[in-house]
Length: 575
Image (cartoon, rainbow, N blue to C red; front, side, top):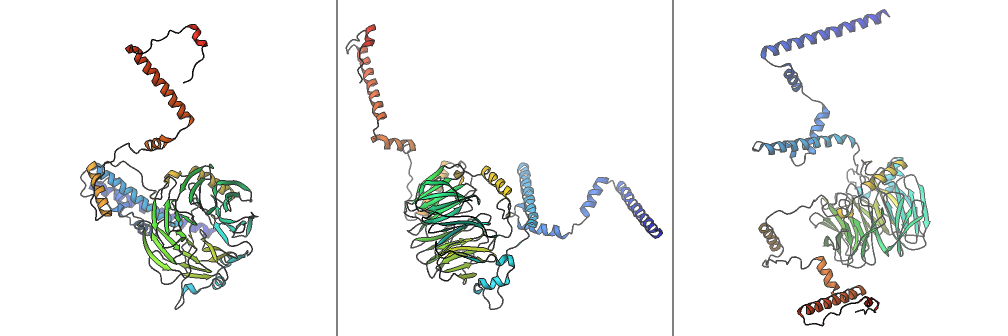
C-alpha cells in the first residue's frame, strides 16, 4: 500500500510540473505578442494553422475527393472575373462542389466489399473452369448456390428474381407456377393453372406476381390466390414491371403495348406498334424506356405518353430474339435469328461490337457489374468487359447437357446466374457478377416483414408519374428564347446536314390549320347522329323565324296575326 501511495504522489507531482511549464510558455508567448502588437486571438489562429495534419485518413480523403471532383469544378480560376456578384456566386458553387466531393469520398468507408473475379494462373483459362471444380473450392454457403431442380413434366421454364435477389419465381410452359426463397429452400406457394404460361414477373415485392397465361394475364398473391384477371391484356408473350412507376408493361401477339398501373388498377396507355407479333421486351433501368424487338429486325423504344416510337433502330437482318440493357442505361445487347449478337451504345445508337453465335441466341442478361450472359441451345457463355473492347474468348462457359436454355437472369447482389430450361431450373456461380455493396433504402436482401411493409408504403408515396418517362430523364423543358432568325438558321443547318444533296426551302406553317380540334371537326363533318340532326333542325327553325321578322319589318311579309288567350289550347305543329 505504501509503495502504491508513493507512486501516485510522484505522478501527481509530474503533472503539476507539466502544467506549470505549459503556463510559463503561454505567458511568454502573450508577452511577445503584446510587444509586437499581435492580438491573442490571431496568435491562437496562427498556431492552429501552423499545426500540420499528416493523418493517413485525411490523405486518403483528399485523394478520394480528387476522384469525385466533377470535371474540375473545385478548381475554378477566379483571377479574370471582375464582376463581384459573379465572383461570389462562383465561390459559393466551388465551395458546394468541394464539400460534395469530400462527403462522397467519406462515403467510401461504407463500401467495404469489392467484387472478385476468377483469375487463372499460367496457361489456365477461366472459361475452362467447371461448376464442379468451383463447388469443390468454395465455402459451404456459396457452394449451396449451385443446384438443379429437375421438373421434366412441365417445362420449358421461365424465371424471375425479386429486386433484392431473395425470392425466385418460376413458371412452366404447361401450367406449373412456384415461388420460394431460393437461399433457404422455403417454398412460398405452388399451383397448377392447367393452361399455357408464356411469362412470369414479380411486381413491387415478393407478395404479388403476374403470369401471362393462354388468353389473359393474371395477378396472384404470395399464397397463390388469384387477385386480378386483366382481361384487357390478351395473348401476352412478355411482361415487364417498372418498380418506380408501379407499371406492369405487356406486349403480345396483337402487337399492342399496354401499361397497367398496379397501384390504382387503371390502364395508363395502350399503344399500337404496327409491327405485328412481339416476343422480346426489356426495360432500361435508367430511364424506364421499354425496348421491343420485332420480326423485321428492328428495335423500338417506347414511352407511355408518346403514341409513336421514340427511336427505331435496325439491328438485325432477321427477327430479334433477345434484348438486354445494363444498369447504367448506356449499353444494349441484341441477338437475332441471323446468328449475330450485337452490342450497342444507346447514347449514340451505334454498334460497338458484333459476335457470331453457333446457333441463334434465345436469351440475354447483363449483371450489375456488367457481365453479359448469352444462352444459345444447351450452352451459356458469359463475357467480361464486352462493352469496352472486343473479347477473344468468354469469361466463363456452362453446358446444360440435353436441355435447351429458355430464360436466364442474374441474381441481384449475388454472384449467381439462374436459368430455366426444358428440364427445370438451374443455378450456377459466376464470381464477380453481383453488386457487393447494397443500399438498404433501394433493396435490402435481409429485410424483415416490418421493413418490407414500410418500404412498400414509402415507394407508393414516392411513385413517379408515367409522364416523367423520357429518353433523357434529367432534361427539364424550357422556352427557347433565341430570336426567330437564329432558330431558322439552326433548322437550316440541321436540314442541310441530314440532306447534303438537296436545297433547303423554308416552309411557313399556317398556324391553327392543323390543330387537334380542327382535325377532330374535319373527321366529324360526315358523321350523323340524333343529336346532330336535332340541332340542325332547331337552327333551321330559328333561321326561318329571323327571316320572317326581317320581312315584316320591311313590310313585305304577311302581317302578324294577333294572339288571343285561346291560342294556347291550339295544337303546336313541330317543325
